[in-house]
Image 1 (cartoon, rainbow, N blue to C red):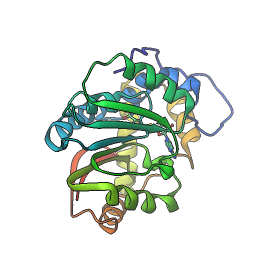
Image 2 (cartoon, protein in one colour):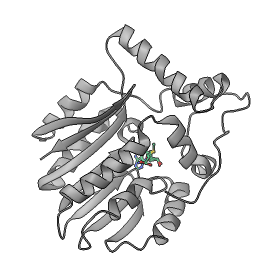
Image 3 (cartoon, rainbow, N blue to C red):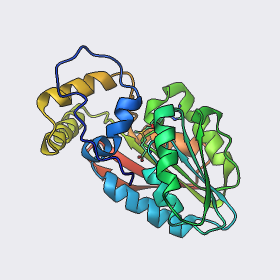
Image 4 (tube, rainbow, N blue to C red):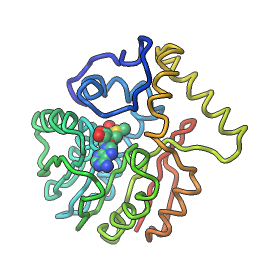
Length: 243
Ligand SMILES: C[S@@+](CC[C@H](N)C(=O)[O-])C[C@H]1O[C@@H](n2cnc3c(N)ncnc32)[C@H](O)[C@@H]1O
């Protein structure tokens, strides 16, 4: 966890809709935003610790793609063998500078680097673990298969990809129910109706969810042999994909 404790009030006052961006204002409140906006986020951080302990291979590289403030990157690093090298990647300068600050305060032994880079341009090699925690959903749909192909090609035998995403459902009734429950969850976290509505509008066409089946098909196409759901909370889901 980083030391940033600001409460997310970014959508609390009426505003004209602008597309959501991972800028400095978002980075300043991001810890609070993601914990109150992603059901199961805390559990997933523990899953990352478990995955790191179980699948982190000596002398391998472990990637956190879309590392934001480094919460998952830290959880990874703190649970890996000392001979691992951790690579956090994010294309937002505001996120990268805060992530570097947060990582520098951690004394775990595994070496690390935080890169400001598009994950489309990130070469994956000698990897035992790759984390894609709520990042693929922000990348153009047509680019997602190629990214998963590159990740799969760079993962060693016995390695794993953790893919967490907001998902949608083909069945209209199921979709409506899950989204309603999710919005109830956000109100339960203290967000107002206005905040929920304005954030939703800002994310339209920026966060584009796929179905669970689309994710499974892409992962299979990329060469992953076994795919297991390890978390689902309303319309948020995490998959472990094994080479
Ligand atoms: C929802 S946040 C990820 C949260 C983070 N993984 C965690 O668990 O705390 C998505 C992140 O992906 C980054 N991002 C979006 N598109 C990207 C891209 N094409 N390349 C690299 N980073 C990207 C954003 O800047 C943002 O920090």
